[in-house]
Image (tube, rainbow, N blue to C red):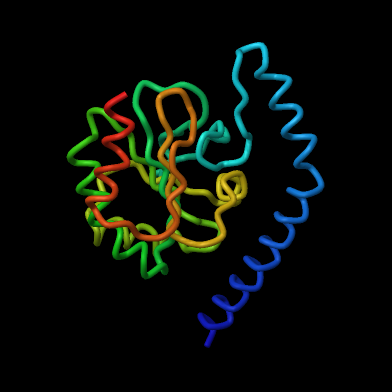
Amino acid sequence: MKRNVAILGFVIAAVVAVIWWNQSAKETGRETEGAAASNSQAAGEVRKVAPVADSLAPSFTLESMDGQTRYHVGGARDKALILNFWASWCGPCDLEAPDLQKIYNKYKDRVDLYAVNAAKYDTVRGAKDFVKEKQISFPVLMDTENKAGDLYKVFSYPISFIIDKNGVVRERIEGVQPLDKWEKMLGDILEE
């Protein structure tokens, strides 16, 4: 019963967030686009600032699950990055985890993969159990205040982003994708 109430509360919060986000995007869209255009005109290009394809990746820093390491996202990088938002109670995340581990094993020398746990809506124990059960070896970051989730407009799980070496979002991927589609999306970025 408590879980159903929690899920219902999360769904209601998600709906309210989507409505709020749509309204605020309408109100601030012109200001944001204008600022982005004026800031990047000197560089000769215009980038959107929302976390959609061909926009700059929003910047944040989070601690790893063990609390010992801090990871930063945003700006130029040595490698492309897959940023995956997930929760331990998410059925599709459970289905996706083995494929993400395969991708990490195959491409870890050319692509970083950070799994951002929705810690504000999850439990630390649930997240740790999930990581152990799925034998996840890539970095798991804890978004305890949902700051990264808010920046990336995450309202359902899983959602992933592929970010290139220049810090530009190349793909926003909602839901589980087949392994061959991941391979294609990564191939396009790694060929550059």
